[in-house]
Image (cartoon, rainbow, N blue to C red; front, side):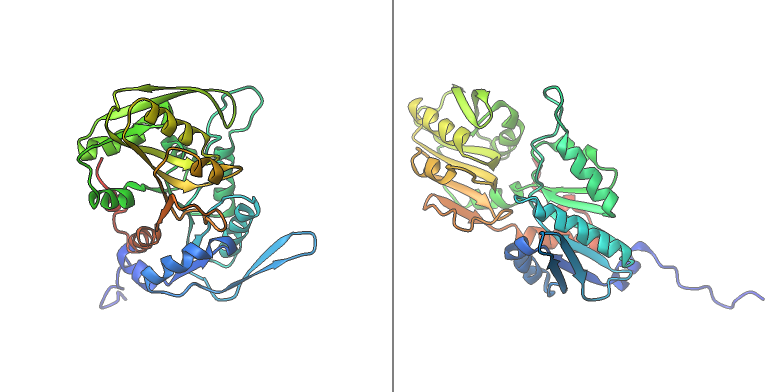
Length: 328
């Protein structure tokens, strides 16, 4: 006998409203995750990380995640244990029957190794993508890959957030009447051009030549910077060698001042010393990596927490992520 009424259809939208959201934070990303959870208006979920005497880790999720939308927030900056912890958490959630697992990786480590540019080297970014998928991630959310094409290394959805959504509103509150934008190397031209196009400003390029990694042998400015306030744009600042050399060369070529926007503050080696001794007036970074004791009066930090909280909510509610982008 046929039923008198058909069962309610569970659409993706209605399913998302029934599924719980669980926000977890890796140990070394709690400085950011706590702010994301505040914007999301939900406490971080509970888990314990056991560490054996030899350094082996075992994360234990202390509450049910069955059927839930689970978001693991963890930047994969050094040491590599941060990446390992994230992979173990994803695996634990998969084995606990989580409904949908998203790895929220504000800073995606190993992204600079995105091609085989010499014999017998790994394509590490692809390897990390494979590991995340093998662990059980259904989705990845990150900010400012070193190269956009890394998205193609994944066979799962990737939400590639852009720091422009944070930097452009910040710059709109400053005087840009005398500003031009610059890329510290040829590889970053597309990134810098997006700002120049948005603000209808000129773009110049600093063409660098390296003999060895992390050392700039020479640099040439392509374009006129005389009397201009220059804003350098890059995805990350590591030793700050390229950035500081670019600032010095721009001043030598007649620039009035030089500031920089760099999303990920890796800041290794003598980075802080290089920045303090350079012609840079200000370095503006995001909080995708904690500064900890890497302090400088020249460094200003803008938070990504609100943007990630909105992206997480839109993912759960099946809303557009691209709506969070600033149009280029």
